Image (tube, rainbow, N blue to C red):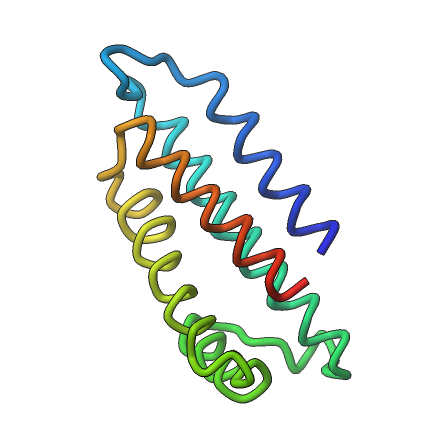
Length: 124
């Protein structure tokens, strides 16, 4: 979990470099980079959990579908809530924030990073 939180803190540091005007980030480069780093934090948290469950590094998921399957197999005790949270984080951080660069409103980005922290703490 320490590594995941380190990544998440790096994402927050990246955002500090982003200029803000009218409660929106004006340079999407920083937002995209921060969202990508925060998504990696989520993946690091899942990897850490799976390693603690006895999986080897070679057995860790290699794709988003692999992460979905791992969540269903190893973290199903949460009645699918973690899987749904992962899906939201994937859509918000990876797709909207990093891949498409659609996030810009300061509160939306900060809420996404908070949601990543909550997810990490749940499985940590």
